Image 1 (spheres, rainbow, N blue to C red):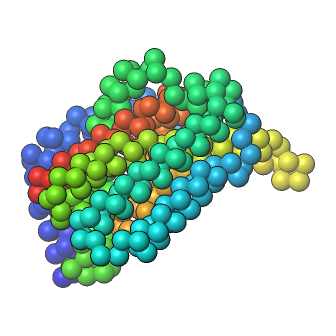
Image 2: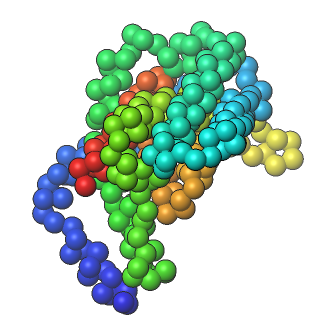
Length: 297
């Protein structure tokens, strides 16, 4: 199938109902672009979070989580080699949950020790939860049409380059929840996907990595006697780098463009509000909608 035929198929799949559903988000996103000069002024008043983190510190909980999960997976394989597939899926998710909880405890300990104002300076202030939830819903509504567009373009480009048989694979957790009807597996996957993963990833990649990157860039934002160069848009640059990092740690390359866009929205919401609850809510709501869609299908 050539490019014109793929283009025809691509646009024929977009219905009037799709446009109406996503129109509010498109309008909100357009207003945001106009008010912020295409995003250039969006973070003009955003201040970096005061901390004394060394550059290597965010890697400590990441390696702790990866090492603990890898070790537990190896032990499970040695001690329980004859489990049914659904039992393996259940134990794998249980190990991921426990490993993430251990890593989150380490992140909280490090944040209390390294951030000015401790956990409040890190972005965990219980007084802002209600405000962050409603703002998170609005932010997700705004970015949702852009996510769908990026996904459709990824599929379009994949079909042009790799052939008509190209399909974007579902996330592994969504495949598992569709494959195994056993209640314990589904409940644990929902808990992992909707609660544990959003909290862990936002605390790690937004709270630690993005903050460290912005602080690192801020510290080097001085005129060099040799190059006379300053780093512009440090908040956006830290968001872009951390978004690229979180996208590429996922195994499926076809997911990277959409993950980058979503992650940029999460990073922006963190820099704009100073609260980690806001990107956590956006992440959790997005994952919940994906889980609901997988169960419905």
